[in-house]
Length: 215
Length: 215
Image (tube, rainbow over all chains, first blue to last red; front, side):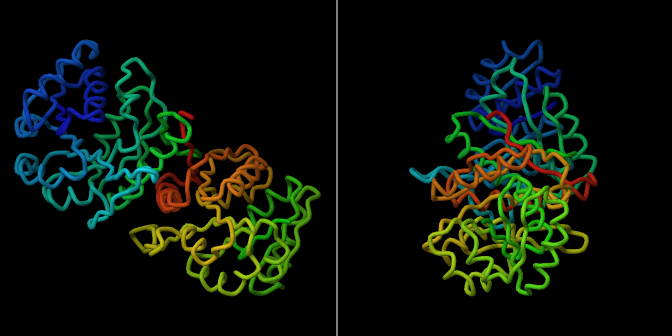
């Protein structure tokens, strides 16, 4: 079972949808279980037979073998203080890119003392295996269920089996390609690609992604 | 005339070579003019009839209409204090990605108080038009003169005509594509892609580049 905490947001819903379509059981978590259930019910008709359910974040965290963190960065610490004890020993996928938006300046990265949201999560969850991934993937494109995705998912972790498990999940979403991005210290650079892409999106009126060429 | 300050390094030589091959006059600058002349002489046979000369950094800065900064980040400030008065009103292309290397940890980005090397250059050169570009392009691939390049050059500047001029220079190198990366504040994210690529290069034993997909 894959759990998506804060999964009522666009990125969490998009990933839950795509991975459910690939045959993975998915549970969407929210602070409010009714919202999670509504999000799951909204996605279910698009899930091609896959099963998507909703629950509160703690129930979702308890059910998930692999648990995605898909809250806004500002909510990550409080979430992990609440449900961290349920994540010991699990693979935790941090998809968060800390960003702010300012009128006239567009998107910019929020400084994180730990270096990145993913490194902060690993500090808060010392017995979990944190993997940073999916930060640069357009939620809008994920939610177009029949749309073939383009680009790479750069996957960073200090835990090799966990990284490989997440790279295998990437391969379930056509045609995303996982790229081994090395250790979790590199998550900082990947997270910061997201505000760059958001600003490029505004210039070109697109939902851009990133690809590593020359591999 | 295009000038490449600190152009005896691999990135400066690679860009001088490729742009000379496209018909642009190129002068390589160095602290030691003899080294610049030697670098130019070494590239000249590969330049397909283009002209590459060498000079000291000040002479090169004076000659260039468009001036590339290709020194290591640690040398940028001293260089600009020396030659900045020669760059007023000019297009200055900052290709620098501030990085350090540590045994066992690979490459990491160096913090820059101004945000990025390019923003620091713009602060030091208030009457120049600074453009950030080419930070993610592999010097090794540029130096393989017949090799067709792959990927994008994300170009950031607060000066639109200067940005467009540099985007036109990118198009002279087959098959690089310029991508408008918005204002100079975004240069930070582009510069930080370079240590990520260096680390990916080490994992995959390649010279990777980056592409923005979905444009």
